[in-house]
Length: 259
Image (cartoon, rainbow, N blue to C red; front, side):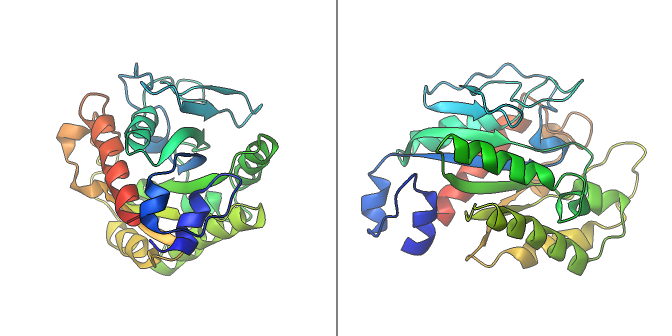
């Protein structure tokens, strides 16, 4: 990634330096994670506590910053399992690029891209987390969009509509003062009852690929490669093989984009 993208990852500073110099300098960043249930505490086994003391989580509701651990906050009623996020934090700090990472989860299970786009029910959450991070003096280093299963399996949203919705999400971040690399994975699989035949996975997968421009939007992992052995119900990642693998895939995609 060129210098103008690397600069987005830096806390309270704008760097103009070679990538090799940047890689040797630890920094603090926030990672905003949004989307639907696989970006929440959906894994039935959730007992992971970040090993690195630099891993923290910020609560969108009150701005409290705590140790990154399952279940990450803010959680919803009945959603007290595990996620990939604390593991991802450990993996990223282990690269030596950052000394401290603040996870900023705002995902809501069962949501569609239209819910996060301007005018959608969940769109205000972007402004809320932006305000919390700004008040704490923490710059956002990246945005992870963990989303796609809902639109791919139970809607008829077109490729163009999904692209427009996600671009609207990114523009909302921009309007709230966050200009950070926005990572979009391929994520369409959800083989859970009553879904027996995906109705829209081709369009959503194509939209996710179309969004990637390596300027604002960057390629996340291909989670459609993870079969039922990584999932506990055909849709949600389990806590044994699923969330550790998801964390590893995210770490690989992020570090690849920064080279």
